[in-house]
Image (cartoon, rainbow, N blue to C red; front, side):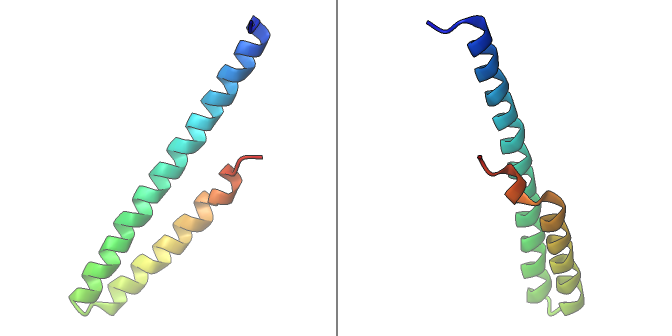
Length: 72
């Protein structure tokens, strides 16, 4: 049987996991959206806009640093 202390520890672990999961999902959505913009810009032969979107993706990747969400 799980006592209250163990239950609370499990609840906190799940809560932290959910927070990290949501952050990763949000970052992924933003990068996918920017990737779509890169493709559309290239289809329009707008290399300058595509380049700006790629830089934004790199910035987003650095800000999110998905590595920090890895399980230990």
